[in-house]
Image 1 (cartoon, one colour):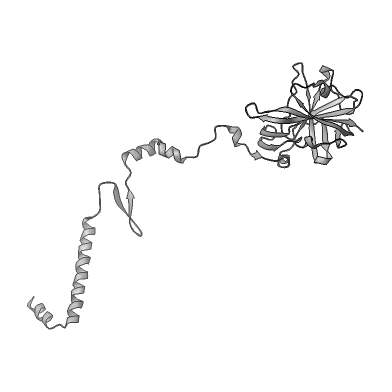
Image 2: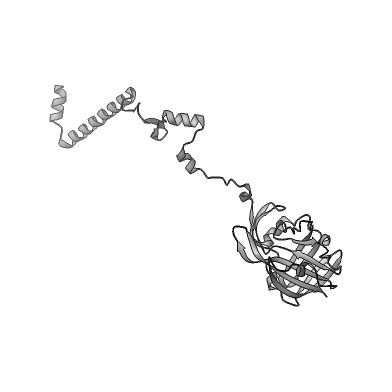
Length: 271
């Protein structure tokens, strides 16, 4: 120790500072090594544990007993449920949504709409026609979707007729539509094939392709009929003249009943 004291006394100031720095480094190294060997300073209880990684210490929360129980049992609490997207309980609302007749074409046409074909050149209408018989209850069923036309067999009532047969062939189609389309397996919201029928004027041409014939008719009149009007005028025909009648919804729409309170009717006679 005396030798060290004499050596220290003869050292200049800079040398003494360097020596003190070296001693401090060695002391800190020894202290750190002792902590690592003893495990001192690492929390072993509570909510935090220290886990080593290649880059140093990472603090991670220790799972509580409740958390472990929820994970192993598959239980979820209210907060968890709020984070999950809620599926729509109505499977129809998960169908693809189509908004135009042009887009609906990619799904084909109603498989039973093979009775005839109806065209309105001025409105670019070219629609398949399905046949429906009107029974003793008098119900005239609606078209299955927005793109098809229905021809009604009214022979049981002594009315109507087939295209080109000398009577009055009665057709109907939707003005608009907001429902599933069964044959296409899609939802539809948009205009129907008769959306612009209320714009037809006397002289406009309507064509019906039926049994290999192309029949041409010219519009004679267009009117709006209410529920209590004389429908015999519409369905009964035009005397002995070969004619067709187009019917579609119009007037005010009732949200509760999802129906219109009037009908637009167009009469056309064979050329």
